[in-house]
Length: 73
Image (cartoon, rainbow, N blue to C red):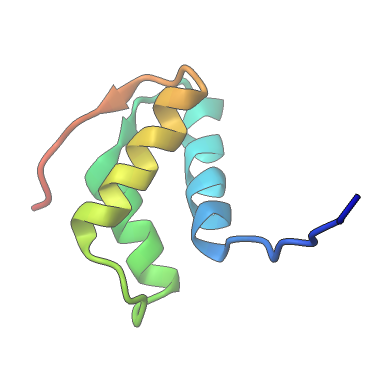
């Protein structure tokens, strides 16, 4: 059997932290705020905002969180 050690995904870690903060207060997860959070900590990330929005949505929906599909300001 081959064991593969994967590096943690820093973007998913940011998204998980963001969602955990919102979920703790019972607030819906705002996709635009999720994008802003990732951009704040990783400003030179080579992903489009839409790709980040998609990852935030998939993460939140996969955990049964309330998602606010808002548009960026």
